[in-house]
Image (cartoon, rainbow over all chains, first blue to last red; front, side, top):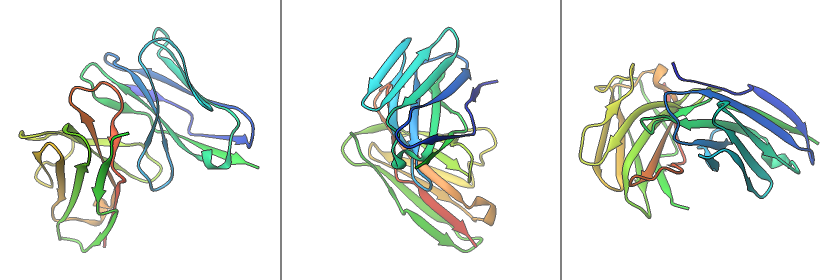
Length: 109
Length: 116
């Protein structure tokens, strides 16, 4: 079956750095996405990786290793507004998005 | 980025009634729209994939006669929850992609449905 694993919850301090890991086993691979979702709201797009390596976008970076079925989202200079759930999603061979359960990130002052 | 508008944002209905949720792509043509359901503290669950002008493809376990999807134009898809029951209470989200885009999907704001 298809599976995406990410930690359920993480806690970090304002101003610090946090890394959220995601591992996946899917039938085919056509890209990996990270989305941010605040409670009661729809997900918002953060990043897209289809080739191995690091994609940097401001305070957020996303890394992909296709051979290891592994990605991480790196958040720097954490702000209180970064408290949210972070969803990892993979497009499989049928271009269907397979979603992880999400990682709830709690930022403390 | 592209905008997807979903309406209503929240709705409360009586058990046994039907509710229609609209999903519109405001500034692009969405050849494919997706409907998701999300229960509290759970991830997004794909319900169905909707292509303009054709019947929706439902995921296993999703009743097509209960969740009616219509994608009549390149900018509008609707989800109708028929004969709603309390267990249908959930957060429903639509998303759309442009053409054969292999990048991001654009999400509507979501609809919080409460069936009483």
